[in-house]
Image (cartoon, rainbow, N blue to C red):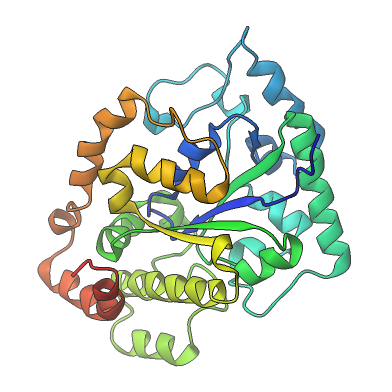
Length: 305
């Protein structure tokens, strides 16, 4: 097997930005391995990933799937499926990986080698040759490249207004305090937070601030990378032309690109495109105006307004 740690692919971006859709399209490419639900449930037991090639064989074809995609098999949560696996990163890379921007931080030698070894064992048990994984929120690019110097990053960006709307209603954001405080530490300037509190501590404005700072922070870190290690993808462009955008990514990432979009994918494109305007039904005009003001310069730069 070739060096399975060479050029790992990280799909990054704010939650609710389409990272899952992009990641899962790419993750189906033969030869790519990913951190699985086993990596999340038992991060210290990479050998559990042998279940992927065993259950996913041509004979069985048993793989887990997200419930929003339709009916699932009995025991779905125990069938192999790609996940963000923050328990894995918290155990091996940094204890605060899942909760911090990790600005200006790098992995020490022990953490670096432990993380690389855990990823290597995961891929070998899966019998795959290269890593692709998804991490949402802060890009953590500088930290990740201290572990994987030649990593490739696909930064998925979506109009901040539907992102804010979705975050306010999604379970994990509400349950983990996203309506009351920043979801990650180390990203928002204390003065910015003080101003937010002074003007009413509105959850929508807090989410808008985090969209703004996550994208700006990720771009700033990406500025230190060679051009071939970082690519941006607007969610809206992806929805407009999944096949074309996937083939573009495949070329940039040195992946085979043919046959990445099936008919079911195409049938969902129009529905997903319409979802991008749903925020107008869920948020009142005053809230839309306030969050647009916060995100305005970046929304304009990204051609959303």
